[in-house]
Length: 253
Image (cartoon, rainbow, N blue to C red; front, side):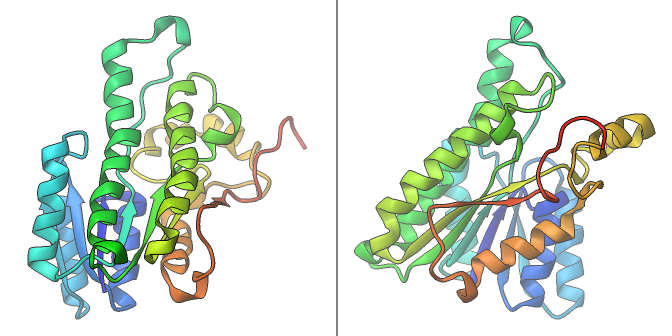
């Protein structure tokens, strides 16, 4: 089994890579700028007897995406599983202060890049095209369900598009041996959120809006992803799974 993870150098992607390797996947770890971190994940996997490679590509560039899939298959064999974990955020921004260039970059990575990765996976996995089927997990966000926290409406919109696309995509490719699922994490402690969560008051305020009263850990999301990739989830496709600590609550309890 060959698994390609976009954005696999850190956070949820890195934890998914490590866990997947433990469960027998050969793992292609994509990165854009975090080469040292990607190679550290590869080294960790190799030290535990697994097989992995680190592959550079910017998923906002179509040519990079095609090259990434080709390189992964050349290194590890046909791709059977894909996790689209690459994603970016923006600083909190009110709609009246939007910048077109920032929005274009946000959607190029979070939405269009993910869609093109699904295109490349479908071309290779589809039984109609001679493939053997496969599984795709698109990492979305609980922000998509509420329009985001203050100042994050654009990010939420980019992830809501992922959820809608995944549903339609899954229906197209289900007869061709491909499952596709959208996974929506809540607030997770990763490199992307560490600055926000470092402020104790901010962290406490965020945790007060989570039913379980705490933020999640990347390992917890990786566990959910690996289950969705497994045969135990063989009849699950075209849906979203919330990994959110029970969902949002509002006001102090």
